[in-house]
Length: 227
Image (cartoon, rainbow, N blue to C red; front, side):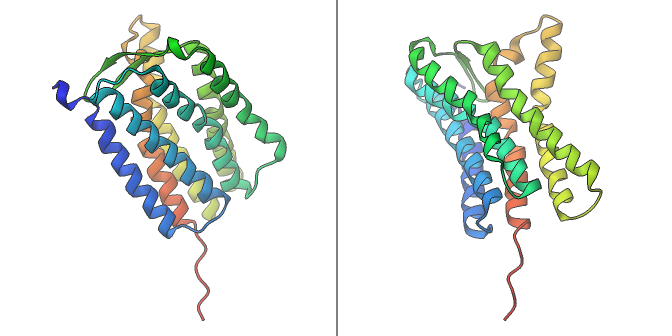
């Protein structure tokens, strides 16, 4: 089965690439769709790198570092996408949410030799990387903020197109975070295996919010004016 290592990552990368092409071709070009395009492009790049690492037994620290830089920008981009969807804009002060991503990118550059692969399989990859607990806290907090933002929109505005689209995105995030919730529950009972591969598993479950973002980008476009 080692010859198939990383093949699920390649499959998901192909699906995300097809989704990306469709959004570029069909979606209205606005802040919401552009941020959605960037999220899906980063997810595609991460899955492709994970495939290269596992399938070709590439353990180059620089490649693993690149993968972690990519996923470090996904949580603030998720918040940025949600804010654009709900409010149609993003306060300049809220751009500070990208500072932790920049911080980790620079810090990890100084610690690049500490990155390595601990396991690879058909379904997942496991990595060793510095400050994993701190990175995990940073990773999930903006996603939780995005979900809260979407929930408040749904609660305050019971109906309407924007609320419907918010429900779609929120459902995608909830499904994507199910493995993380399971991993922390299992860790409380001294079972850490799922937690050790959570970046890889969450990256694969992120296909669900990617599909939701694609739907929102295309469905949410304004109808063309008939001549």
